[in-house]
View 1 (tube, one colour):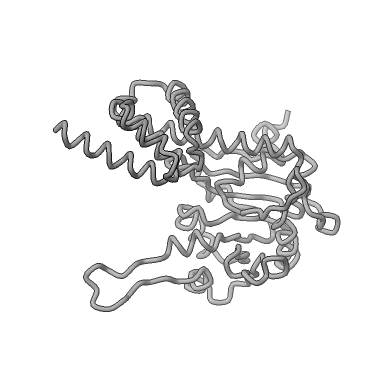
View 2 (view 1 turned 120 degrees about the vertical axis):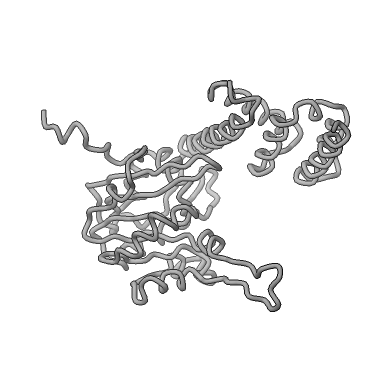
Length: 320
């Protein structure tokens, strides 16, 4: 048996790189592109004015300025430019050709990936061809026939691609031969690569992807699993939980998530805060006062959590 076949990466499915340096997994195609998440990178680059500044001196470079700082003439395209979101094109993803531009590629690997702001793409397609294909992926049809905007967030890419059927994954990838990206789920960070050597033409891939109910359910399950694991790792870092296995903490997190749902706390950021409050302060959280705050029918989930945090702070102060 050919030894290379034994270590060849699986085809068409995301593979976690583990401890491998992502630079060794960069695309080997004739063209390499960066798909930049504008909002993530601009938030990452923003530097507010120092508190003692006499005049406003905040630094807020645009994503284009971030690119130009490294390569003045790197070819680029706005992915939203020719669709339903064309009036907001500069808030959408920016596609940048980094073929033979090592400074930009290194910045993507070493800096922009930390901001959850870049997907690295390898293909034989030219810039305009790839941009047309990515533009065709912006709108997807959900199982109920409503439409949604696909968010090219690196963190969501693995659960998304893993949820798609082979046919839909092939349609979604189109001319893309390799993908490299970094995921972030709170403290859980991983590099992923996908190989698609049988990349096809974009000629037959222009129709909108219609998500099957099974794919939608799989995507929701995948993202929920990631969310639970990342939360469990945060809980496990709390001293009273560090003797428990990750599996045990995951089960505890699932129970806390169900408790949150029972009081209509469902948004990820709110659930995250609730689970950590439950883990850190089990005694105050078990009081009748805490229960009353959580079940307040007037306040929003976020407001209830703020009030609960203030209540716990008072209890902790009284116990000192």
